[in-house]
Structures are given as C-alpha cells and as structure tokens.
Image (cartoon, rainbow, N blue to C red; front, side, top):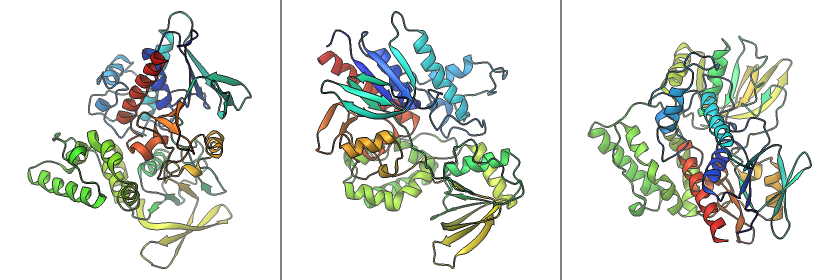
Length: 459
C-alpha cells in the first residue's frame, strides 16, 4: 500500500455517495483520503430528499430506514433525540410505523455526514467539493477528476454515485423536471393541470398542488393508468420464492407469485406480505434471469410490479383518494400527443391507448411526472456521456444503467473490468434491479466499502 494512503473520489454526494463516504471513513486505512464531489451545495440530500415540502413522505416506514444494516434502530434513535417542538422547522412524533417527511430524512443523512466529519481526529480524511465532475483523465497510474470550475483532483479509486438523472427540456407551458422548485409556480388556482405519469412522482405533484390550494381539475395520464397501492400494517410471512429454486422465466415467476398470493389470502394474510417477502431475494432473482427475460419483465410486468412494490404512505393515499372522490383529480389511460401553446394556456392532445379518437384539453400547465430518466443514453450528464464515448464504461445489457460486476466494478467497452472505477446506487439498477431504495443501497454501500478496504490491504 502506498505510504500516502489511497485517494478515493466519490462522484455524487446524495444518499448513496454520502453513505459510502461514511463507510469508507470507518473501514478504510487511516492514511486514506476520501473526496466527495457533489454539484449541489446540499450534500447528503440528492434528488429524493431535497424537497422542501414536508407533505412529501417516505414510502418506507421509519423502522426500515436506518442508514446502517447492523443498527436497525439508528434512524429511530436519531428521531427521538431531535427536537420535538419544531424549533428546527420540522415537527414529528415518529415510531417504527411512521412515514416521515423526505426532507427530515435528508437532514438525518446530512447529520450522519456532519458527525463523521466532526469526529475525525488528526488530518481531515474527508474533503467536500461543491462542483460538478465533468471528465476523468487516465494518467497511467491513477485518474484525474476534472470539475466544471476547472480544478482537477487525483484519485486512485473513483466511485460513481450519481443517483437518478432528471429529465430536461422545459418549454412554455411544459415542465420536464417536476422536482424543480419552480415547477408549480404561477399556476392559476382554478385552471386545469395535466400530469404525465401516474406513479409516485405524480402523487407528490398532486400533493404539492393541493398544498398550494389548487382548486382546478388535475388529470394524470399513463398507458396503463395504474396508481401506486397503499401501505398497510401486515404480518410478515416466510420468503415464498428463494432464488436458488426459483424458475428462470418471467411467466413462471409470475405464476408462482400469483399462487403464493392466493394461498396467503386464503390463510388470512394480506397481499402486501407476499410482495414484502420477496425483498431479500429480489436482487438474486433478477440476476439469475436471462437478458431476454429481463427485457420481458420491463415490457410487460414492471408497471404492475412498481405499483405493488413502491407504495404510498396511508396519509398520502387518503389525500389522493379524497381528491378523486371530489372529482378534482382523475386518471386516464392515454399517451401525450402534441402540445400547442394558446396564449397563457396549452392545448394538450391525448391519445387514448385503446384506439379511441384523440382528445384535446385546455390546461394551464403540463408536467412530466414519468420519473427519472430510464435509459442511459438519455442521461444529460457530461461526465457519463464522455465516459460512454471514450469506452471507459458501457451500458448494461438493458441500457438502463451502467454495466458492473457483482462488486460494483465498472466494465468498459472492451469487456475489461476496472480495478479503479466503480459505481453504486440507481446507475447500477440494470444489473441489480433493487438499487434505488434505502434498504438496498445501504447494503450496496457497505459491501463496496468492504471491497475497497480489502483492495487497500492487498496492494
């Protein structure tokens, strides 16, 4: 091992990058130095936890949201230690079953990172760079990270923890990025709003509109018109589909799951318990599927999987249902056609999926709620684009992320496995599938930190 220690650069300072930095600080050699590079000033939050709306809730209960798998009550303990009087701007009384705000959870991650920095003795081992990484240069011995501001940083190991990428391309009357703080600004209170997509991003947007006292109609469209299901308290059951004995086709997997659902319901269990029982095996089930079967899953099963796997907090679901019952909010099966600006409004063409004639509605604004970008070639990041062009990385076989090994090492265009470039988090979902939720990402970060630490000891 070099006397100076290993220099490890993490590109992306959201949940994945911040948690990985913490684990590396705890598990790597004392001489190692870690650099956390984040284009936004708010380290630890990323897209998911940067919302300023406390009505945007986690879709996982507080009892399952610890940042550390070996300390399952870490988040709950943190909640109990924080002020309960709202002196920090957030009020909550949380127990294991509570769905707390995403903003509060972002504060939790920031607090972990801050505490780790404050607890360091001697020379600082973690450096924070508030800038966007735009290029990597191979010097032969290591890599040099170039940031938008012009500075360069040498690193022996680089980890891409870039999170989800947001769509771009706002136009008059059309918002491509619903997470933009100004996405809902200036909407006439009584006018109609069209939301494209019916998943959790859509529910957040509806909640935001309701919070700003929007009184006009809200229409959400998608090809299948599926709304995320609602969480409920359930009794856990044993895993129903161990990866070692599971079939290797999507049709056979779905048949086994349906059979398990029927048995569970007949025994008095809730369907949610069956879906939850798949969690420990989902990654291995996905990895063992042949590429053609994974594509079949994405084409035919994913929408139904998403609405059952990624559910709404009960309080969110209640507000959505109340808006539907009142007639203010509706869902329609349709695709978005042409948009024509007409003064201050937009003529939106809706293309029904069942072959009915196109419809035209007049709305104040159209908001894309289809979620983060789903194809790696769509990613606007100059860094990712350049890495793909140079062949230092390659898309996974499905094209929804980057190709990595089971340890997270990036694979280049020539099928070579890198010993210096790694990835963690949503950018690896094509390989691991379950790579976007906290319970899964924390395991990935812990495993990658152990792998990097072992590499340091071996060199």
